[in-house]
Image (cartoon, rainbow, N blue to C red):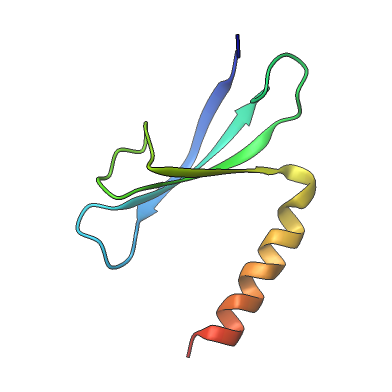
Amino acid sequence: MKNTTSTLISTFDLSDTKKGKISVSHLAEPYGKDSQPVVSIGISLKGNVEDPDWKAHIPYDNLDELISALQEAKKQFTS
């Protein structure tokens, strides 16, 4: 049984949707006792941040690489 503690960090509107939300949370022990914490990014098309339609768990050790990749995507593909 998982004993995950979730702490909501931020929520904001999902662009180009009526009710969509993006949520960013800290999850302690997401995969059971003694597992490393992660950042959880949730996407909810209906605005329900408690039960997102999609979510990704990113280990803290990978955050700098992810941020860099997101910045590069923005630089290359937006005007």
